[in-house]
Amino acid sequence: MSSAQRVAFFFVELLMQIFIDNSFGRDAKKLPDSVVAELNEIYKALEAAHSLGEVVYDIKKIEGHRKRKAFRLKLEKNREYRIGFYLEGESIVLSRILHRRDIYNSFPPKK
Image (cartoon, rainbow, N blue to C red; front, top):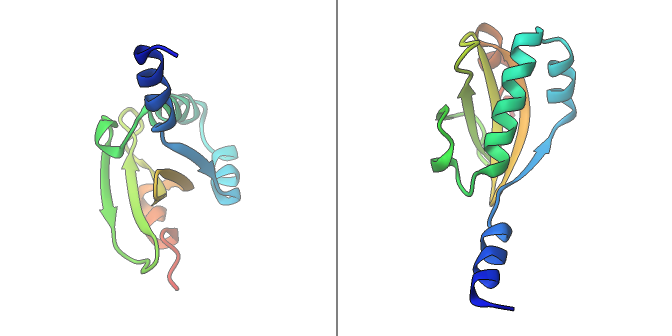
């Protein structure tokens, strides 16, 4: 294995993994087509990122869960929607996608 192949292999291993909660899937089924199209773009961007710093979307940490780091991502074209997700190590867990008036009541769960 050449050094270039080893470096390429190293970077492939550092890509973030994405997991989807059942609640995210249920929310996504109710979305308008324009939001689903943007959601596909966001998923590809998250999949290609090595860290949250590389993602060009508006991401902010939110409070409310002691054991997990909770974040929200604001969609660019459909600005009234938010994605609620957790960061667990090098993995992203997509938890909810809701209208901005609803996301903060449902995510993160109050425990």
